[in-house]
Image 1 (tube, chains in turn red, purple):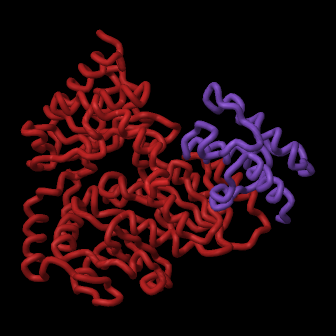
Image 2 (cartoon, one colour):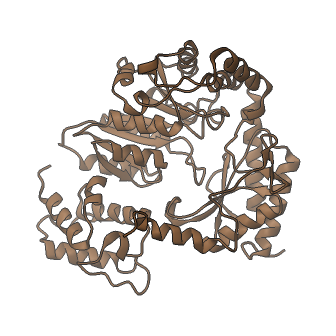
Length: 399
Length: 89
């Protein structure tokens, strides 16, 4: 049997789409022109599938800081921090993140995926109980696999179900560690964090919140959902990423716990991978400064997502439960989702195609993400094109 | 719905699981003790994990994800449920 035979079903699923649509897993841009436009197949497309929430990828201050760091620090660190050492700018960025969150310490990871993988798998040890939201990101599931703890899913955004599953563990030894997310990556809905924090306190559990999609977007100073919900004191560990609002790559975890820095010598996804290169540290440090000092960025992205969300809802699409920078449209089936996605590119709009099993409830989704850099004209054009294609394919009613 | 008692034997657990799956699996799929969970039910991985949550509630137990990964057939799943029901709290 072929070594790859185990993937036959997945291969067949992708191949069933090909021939009629572009390969959704292999979109190749000729050139990215700005946070909101790119060249694809020689034509300009509007970017509505990038997670570039604050539009900082081409920000002049971020680019300049990145170039300066590149020239001063070189192209890469060529190794891990435990082996090759920490650059002063790594330590500076960690201090800045800790200050931003008002926490004692922060650690940076080479990707957001690794931040979840490392933090969760290391904290949740043998005999502990990890309780994860059923709609958790793949990085949380993979962390669960790497962990030696017992892993229990609770129903998505259902605090009562979480409490019920925690009560079921009564009498059993081990820490209880709850993991949830600020904004969920597929439907763009937020966690009921006040209720979850109350359960955490009542049950004596620990709480990890992944603010990957909410950093820079929610909360008075952009710290995310925990700040918006007023429960930051209940969150033991904040996880986040540099690859969305901060416009680069990398991840972090922050905590007030005095022993947090022990993770630097026990957390393998932190220890055994190359640290982030100077250019990335430079742009992220500058982006964090922008985020901290320019509140108009968050205001704009929130206004923009409301405009896209309302526009699509008014057109008759079935949208996600909340207007957040991720705006998901539910498609009737997998086939029409793929054809819809493909037609949007034909018409000059790039979004994400999200299919089961990567989606909750086996939904087929067209997933858009909104940026503060989008203009109202761009958003209205995207709504207009999506509506026209929706009518063409019978996804929404013809008016 | 919580368990109606904790003395269910394996055959009754198995019958209950098969009954719960009926109506959830695609038309034409016949579920038996020997049915392979991943390849035989016609459910994607998320739907299988959602079904496991229903089983946890039906039998009032916790089924950790690593236990789910260990079982391949409905019979093995029934055995795991039986073991977990008998485990001391």
